[in-house]
Amino acid sequence: MRRLTAAGVVLALAVLLCGCSQEYYDERGKADAPVAGREGDDTPAEVYNFPDGFGNLATKCVGPGKRGYATTRNVHVEGDGGDGEVVIIPANAAVVDDPDCKGP
Image (cartoon, rainbow, N blue to C red; front, side):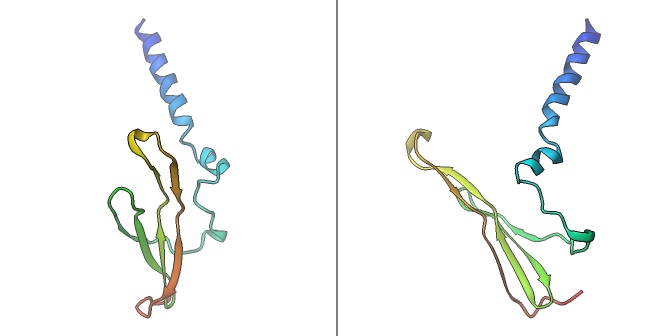
């Protein structure tokens, strides 16, 4: 009986984790975009968390003299009791001049 229970737990975990695969996100267009030749800057961005209802902000240098800003996508329900309309605010990105950003 214990062997059957252990096998059931392992099977349940496998089923749950299958939905988290890279292929799952690739098929739905939610994965990170590939970088040609694996070249590029993989340093982390500075992230600024905003309160619920606002998208978070990330920023980093993206080239000589250029800084990129990106917001997260936000989803919320308008109206009382969760019966309202679902509003999806898309992510935004901008690249601006920043003389503090040095080249590679």
